[in-house]
Length: 283
Image (cartoon, rainbow, N blue to C red; front, side, top):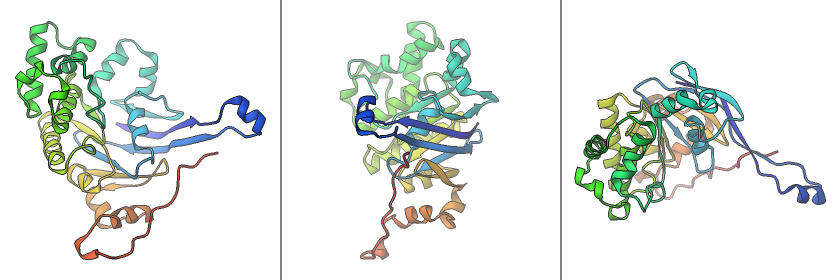
């Protein structure tokens, strides 16, 4: 799968009347600008960068939640955005193969639905599993695959911890047997010990099912644990893209070096740090 020149621009201008009275031009926010990368089947590309650099926007572009301003994303030889825009059965089939795990497990699960209904919803929408009995069996298998019990399907989200809720989110994403998972900071809202459990589950699932991941994070320790290749984003652009070992051993871009330098080290206590400066460009 390959993204080529992917870009998304948001119009953040004041209302038209304000612009006329105050004689101000339109204001555009270039959230993602000319992002180009390739992800090999069965591997993980991590996008890393500070908050607001465009990582989550890039994730939403790949799953079709946003329409790109320009550029393309090709999945299995087809233009994904053209398929999403056309709609119909082809779009529905493609959405089965591309799923997303959202950042906040407290906001991404419907509190009024039981866990079984939350995980079974994609099966009903895409009609991948027919019949209530078959759906319940599949839900039980998915819960067990992420380290929970089949009996948990009758519970509500508020009865689970943050880490368990994120496991439910992973199970829901796997409900349509996807090939490509876009993971938008899936562990950032969790405690460190719980992060390790969720990451190990994701790595095991990747190994067993041959999944391909785009993993978005601002935590370089997590990125080092899960990725094969790393892309560094700054102000909407990918400023460096390299295999994980090469990026961590010999970073080329100054921003990458500053990110690595920001990782706390025991022997560097008291050393002054250079703050990262800048903001998303507007015009």
